Structure formats: structure tokens, C-alpha cells
Image (cartoon, rainbow, N blue to C red; front, side, top):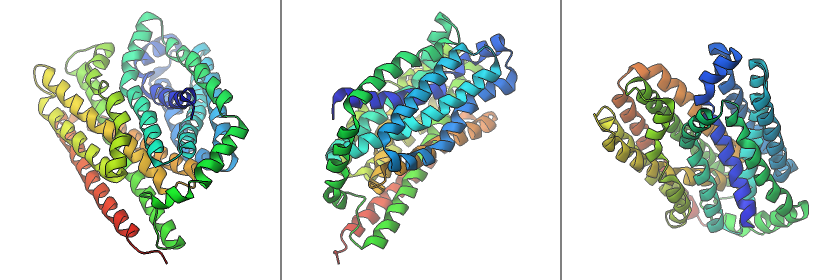
Length: 409
């Protein structure tokens, strides 16, 4: 698969997650410029995230039927038009409507890019590496959003956070149009999934107990991957939201300084996530997911112990440990969902993405409501949830290995 095409697809996922958080630091300026009010500012955030979460599953299924290349191109175009409209919006109502269009493009982009990468991989090893790179760039986007948004707002104004999308979309769209022609996509489809029927049978997602048992087992594994992925984002985005509020309310930091304080959570992600595919090839996606969950839980426990300290060094170390765990976990649990239903990559991608987005939205809401509770307790509680997820992953790995030992009939 051409490297430029891979980078273009990964850039799409990066943009989708970047626009979840980059706009947050621009909200005060948006309020002052457009007289948005609390309802208007909430609409700017929710119009994007709610539409994104609501459409993921349906768009994934449509992509399986119509082709994921078309979905990706459609998504990028919607994202471009929506971003341009956001940057030019004269009223809060137009800005919210434009964010809705961005959400439609984001749903198509997120689902389609992962499905294209998955179905075009020559084998499971290549799929693991591609998913790892895709998840690594996406993982960078969430903690980078507040920091990058703060820089753009300080240097320009709130409209700059939407201008940023335009050149990135154009650069990502060119290789997708050039290198993934319909004829090439057809060859990839027949050479990947059709020719890959043998590799599907030997993967963790396979079961040799017959069609009915295989279908049931695949559905259970997909549901498990979705539950774990939702729990992951519940803890990750909830904790990140809590930290940024803590830095501003308790430590008196500015939005940019708060984003800078979370930088240690960003640094390990591009290095660890790209190695997750290699680890998954050795341990399997479920055991790798369990490993990531345990490391992330340790990081959350350390954050609970250090968050109220006078300095930031202890908390910075805890953030690095947490990020290493998340970096290991994210590509592995994404791959687990794709492995569970390899014949329908769009649906599997949509289901996993829906679970992650809903988990993140619920996490932010719950942590916001519980913000009056001690931050230490919330961090430790999130760590306990991740440990429970690790036990679920290990049990799924055991069951999957057992089903593969059943002789074919």
C-alpha cells in the first residue's frame, strides 16, 4: 500500500479527533464575538460530537455495501466544506449548523479510513502495523488539541482553529484520489479479503466450530471489543477533562498552560502505538489490550497519588505511564474489533468507533458531574475500571484460544 495513501488515511482520523478538543479553548472568544451564551457554546461542541457518534455505525454499514473509498472522499469533502463554513460563520446559528456538517464528514472519515486500511492489508501482520499507525496519529490528536488550539487562538483568533483543517484535508485527499482508483480498490478487495479467507481462518477472530458458532463467537468478540473500547475512552477523556479543569481551577493555569501541562501524556503515544502492532502479533490483540489496560491503570493510580502534590514532576511521570498504557491499548482494541468481523470491516469499524465516542462523551459528562469529588478518588476509580477491562480481555483471549482448538467438522 503506498505510503502517501496510508498517511492520507491516517491524517483523516487525526483531524476527526483533533476537532473534538481543539475548539474547546476557542469557546470564550466565540462567545464574545458571536454572543453565543452557554447554550451556543454547548451547541458548538455537541453538534460535532453527537452527529459523529450517531452516524458511525450506519456509515460503516453503507461503506461495506457501496465501497469505503467513496465514503472517505465524501467524508473529506464534507469536512472541508464544514470547516470552511465554520471559519466564515457570522452567527452562532451558522457556526452550529456548520459544525453539524463537520460531524457528518468526521463520521464518514473515521469509519472509512480504518476500513480501507484493514481490507487492503496483505496479512494480519501488515494490518496490525497499519492499525497501529492509524491509532497512533489519532491518539496524538486528543491531547494535542488544547495545546494547538491555545496557540492558534493566541496568534490569530477562534476562526484559525477551523482554517487549520483546510490544507490538511487537501493534502490528505490527493493521495486517496490518486492511489485508490476504483480499479485499484477492486484489486485490493479481491486480493485482500477474498484471497485472505485463509488468513481469516487462522486469526484470533476465527472459529472452526461451524458457521453458526463462528457467527455467534464473532458477535460476542465484537461486543466485548466495543465494551472495552468504550470503557477506555470513558476513563481517558474523562480523566483528561478532569485534569485540564484541575489545572485551571486549582492551579490557576491559563488554558494554554493547562494544555502544556498535559504534554507528557502526548510524548509517548507516537512511539508506543506504532509498536503495539508488533506486540499484538506476538501476544494477540486481546492479551496486548490487557497489557495496555494494566499499564494505564497503574498510571491512573499514580496520577491519583501525585495530582495534589506541590510540584508537577510526579504527575508528569504518572502521565507518561498512563500514556504508554493507552498507546499500547488503543491499536490493539481497535484491531480486536476488526478481527472479530473481518468480512464487514465498515460495520466493525463503525461499531468500535461508536463505542469509543459514546464512552468518551459519557466519561466527560460523568467526570464533570463528579468534579466536586476528590480528584484522587476519581483517578483511582478510573484505574479500577481499566483493571476490570483487563480481566475481560484475558478471559476473551482464553475463550478464543479454546475455540480455535476445537477440531473442524
